[in-house]
Every structure is written in C-alpha cells, then in structure tokens.
Length: 125
Figure 1 (cartoon, rainbow, N blue to C red):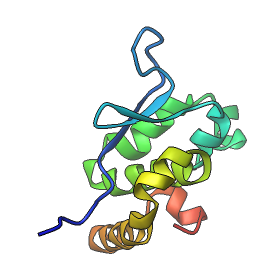
Figure 2: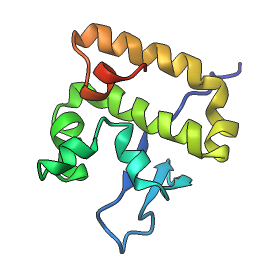
Figure 3: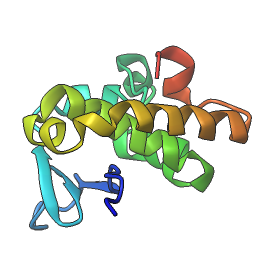
C-alpha cells in the first residue's frame, strides 16, 4: 500500500549565523532553499515597508503574528510553502504535486479557526 506524500513541517533559521542551516528553509534536516531574497521571504508573511517604518523587525513581526499563536501554524507553513513554490526547484520537484491538497488543508484550517492571519487578509492563499 502506497502512502500519500505530504509536505513535511518546514522551518527556517535567520537569526543564528553560526547555525548549519542559517538562511535556509529545511524539511526534516533537508535544505529546500537558501533564502537569498529576505525581503520577498518576509513579504509572504505580510511584512511590508510600512510595518518596517514603525520599527517592528521582521522576526518580531512573524513571532507576534504567527508563532506566538499556535493556531496560526497552518498559515505560517503555507506562507513558507508559497515562497518555496516560487523560489525552490527542489521543493517543487519533491512536493509540487502536493501543493493543491496543501492549499485546501490551509483553507480548512483557516475556516476552522474562524479568522485569517495578516497575510491571508491581504493575499489570495
């Protein structure tokens, strides 16, 4: 019996320059992409130039709007996936076929939660 391929939990490290996966998006210790376009990466979470002008740092913004509230994990993961679909050939080759199902799971999680994250309010997810 074949198991259905699913997109694994994704993580990234942007605040520890000595970490082996610094500036990388990782799935199960496998590097999916080196984040070369930090502005684009932060933008998928809804971080804008206007927000930056208020003095809120990108990592602080992500913590306050996604990480602190565990109910937003589906959105956090979805926005990382959105970045990878655009920037990582490796991710697209491995998990591109799972993308539509992942989008559906994300929408279901948003509906169950009853509210949208800041990025989902302003983008089509």
